[in-house]
Amino acid sequence: EIIRERYKILDRLGGGSFTEAYLAEDLKLNSQKVCLKRHRIFSVEVLADLVVLDKRLQEVDPRMVFFPRLHDVFFDGIGFTVESLIAGQDLFHKRERDAHFFVKVRHIRFVARGVLRGLALLEDAGIVHNDLKPDNIVWVEAPASQNRQGKTAATPSPSVRIVDFNCARLDQREQPDQNWNLLE
Picture 1 (cartoon, one colour):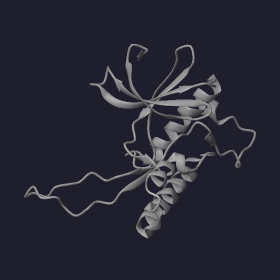
Picture 2 (picture 1 turned 30 degrees about the vertical axis):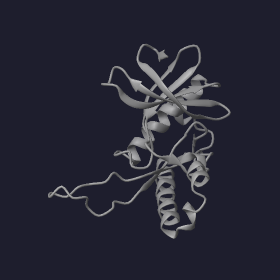
Picture 3 (picture 1 turned 180 degrees about the vertical axis):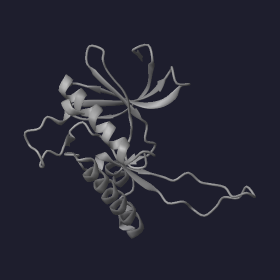
């Protein structure tokens, strides 16, 4: 299936109550792999929120270390978003596949540090995630690197990414009556 004459769906990645996520190729960007999300409930207000949230995420995480990027948002009968693909496994399924994974203190340390750093960046951006759970934290294995002699270098550290900002909102504790989306 090809959506909007641009995104070719390759596989289903998962889904929840309101969204289905798919692995897709962006046919206009050299078949780059992306995450295409089909939203069951999607309004103009949600669209505005997601665009503003992504702008703020880019400001605090310009190298995309902690969060995915929003590449496209459109309606084709229903709402769609296209995000950068995070190649990893969410913590819920990681634990399901390996019940002893989180027995290792090293793994817990990586998750705790990564999530806390991500939450600190969200605080700096004025964003409240509202749906932080193992399903929305992705464990990303670090790619093996090679030294100049072509031998595998020391094992790089894995990282975690916080994903799924569909329930996220701008933190309005400072000025609760201000409509931040209209300002940005």
